[in-house]
Image (cartoon, rainbow, N blue to C red; front, side, top):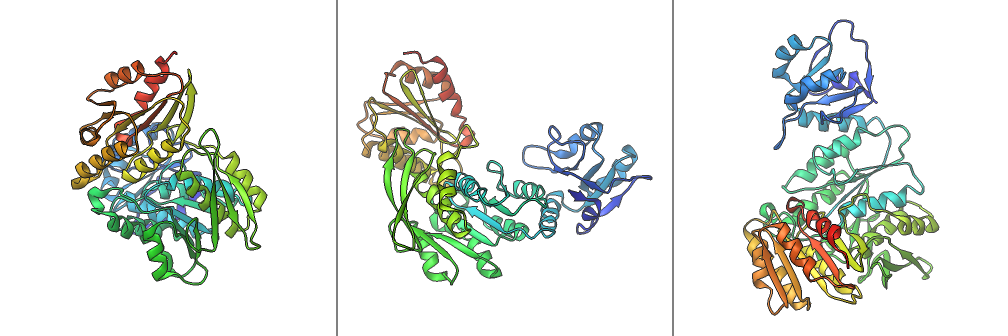
Length: 467
């Protein structure tokens, strides 16, 4: 519940309140005119692809009674809309963050933030699933991890919640620090450091600097502790320099507070690991998500569960019964004897490498058909990184590669000695070519950045395959 008094507390706010306006509170906040509900406050936000001000007329016709706009808009709007509460602020996006931060301060709820180059959304969901065995958890839905999504999540916080698990994302320096100022995390976990958003961060050291803004905030405020994955060299180096009493370390390969060993995969390539406890004994845990990266995501969730007092049996149950929210996040499906691996949620060099290694771990009866699209936001190193992926495909012994997108041409060009190595300018031709070579026992693996929309390819192939 968001009170009108909270809107009046926003920095520099100016209020136009119609005569006889009696509402004292609203259920929540909305920014999308298509989904905002009658009892919510509409924030008019101007973004890269849309302008909330264009839809004020629509939302007020839906019965919305309160809007937050730029102060300069008040004179015009109060003449046109005489029944709505109009709140004017200097910047609606910053005020959304301020409102969320103020709202959080009304509750005594611990906040765990999760960042990292790869695996942060799945890790966040796994951690939330584990902690939900003991606590009422508010978590980031999907990957709404930016300066808009994080505040919207916090504004759903209510008295029933006992724990908050938030995902924090970044593609510019300072973004995670800003998000931390809003949500004031008590605990921070960075999954790993990899080659993400190199257009802005230049290299992995830049990525580490951006992601470690989470750790830096917790170190500076001194009101919590950090989780360190010592299997990542950048995180290991940060921990070596900054570790303080109370911080938590976990690792497969290095000495840590929590250690584990990998046992193997089931037929769906879902991993199982054994974690070592203080008494020296091991317990086995199955993670119901696909691929090698799940070994690390599941272990991080186990560690969080142990630290926050979740029963061992409940951790096992949560990891085993976990279901992914997104239909585009590493989904595995068998149809007509063909195994389809849909990994089209996002893509960067590290996640492609992990996906290919996962594919190599599979016991494939037939042939692997690898479909790769562009990895976006790599900037000046894009050609080099796409070429490196092509070389990796060759070195790992794969035989059939299909690429799509202007940058992925370099992937195709650098992949040598393959039986099939084809680059396509349209998805229909690509889909037809893959279909023509499929046999029972084959695997179709599809990977690309969200902007490439390669789920269209896998959907087309699945709809037409009939062996």
